[in-house]
Length: 308
Image (tube, rainbow, N blue to C red):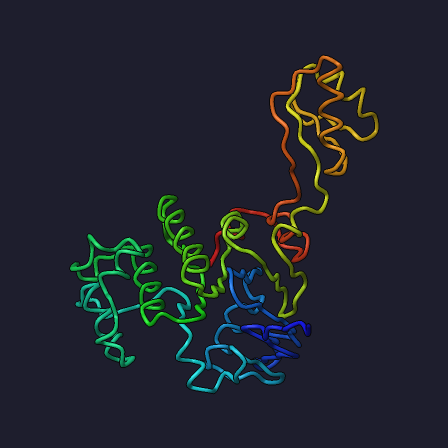
C-alpha cells in the first residue's frame, strides 16, 4: 500500500523580505503540518509578524514562495478558510461586542450563518456582550479579536499574542480554548507568543526564528526531552548519591539521576531495597525557555519573555 503524504497546511521556501537594508526574513524554509497547535517563537525582530503578514496576503515577499492549504496566498478560496488576529485588535469604540461580531459577519458575507452568542461564550465575553468596547481592557479586546477570527469556522487560524494583557485565569481559559479548537474542532492553530511556559503547555510543535531564519523546529516533547534526568526526592540523600556514583547529582534536597528511562524502574527498586525513602520520582528535561535563549542568544529577563 502506498503511503499517503499529507501536504503541509503552510509551506514556505526561501522566503525573504527586505525593507531597505533590513532583512526581516532571510531565506526562511518552514513546513507546518495540518492539525494541532503550532508555535512560532522568536525575539522581537525575528520575523514572526512579517511571516504572518505574508501568509495572510497583507504584504508580498521579496523572494521565495509560500503556500497555504496547498494554494498560493493570493488565492481567495484558500484565504476564506483562514482566520487571524495580528497584534492587538481595534474596533469602533461605540459598538458593543455583539455589534462588532455582527458587523464583521456582514462584512464577510456570513451574517446569517454565524452563531454570535456561541463565539462570545467560547471566548468568555457573554456577560460583556452588550458593553461598548471603548471600556474593554486589552485582554477583553484580545478575546473579542479571537472570536472575530473564529466565527467563520476556519480550517486554519493564525493568532499573534492571543493572551497579551490577560490575567492568569484568562490565560488559562485561552489555553483551554486553543486546545479545544485543535482537539475538538479540528482547526489548525498557529500562534506566536512570548509566554514560553504557555507555549510549552499548549503547543504540539514549535519553530524558533532568529534574525529571519529558522534555528530550531520540532515536537515540544522531543525538544524538551533532551538532557532528560530522573529527579528523586529521597532520604537519605547521601545513600542515593552513593548508589548512583558519577550518574548522580544533588539538587537541593533531591537527587538528579542521569539515566535512561528504561533504567528507572530498576533504580527505584534498588533504592527501596537499600532502605531509601522515595517521596517523589519524576522525569525532568530541558524546558522550552532554556532552548529558546540558547538558540536565539537572547538575554533572559522578564522583559524579553513578555515583551510585545
